[in-house]
Image (cartoon, rainbow, N blue to C red; front, side, top):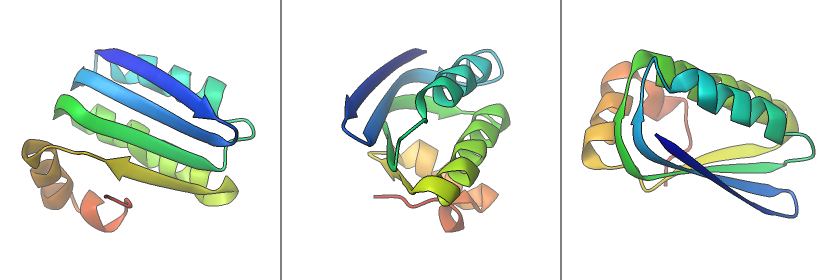
Length: 98
């Protein structure tokens, strides 16, 4: 998985490319934890994300909990397969998805 970060003032966009699973979730979690200081808007660009496992969902939920305290988090560009996983797991009701 490739993680690309773009910061514009207090807005951080994290683009994910590939598979977010038990192997790559710790890498994303570390990136998020080291990047959220002073961030009030976090955007996950998922248009190139092919797969997300429960470990990946846990990382998104953790990021959502942090952002609930300091701003907002948005999921953008999720593919149909990813949206189906969000729907089945109930994450569609937890996350802000555009």
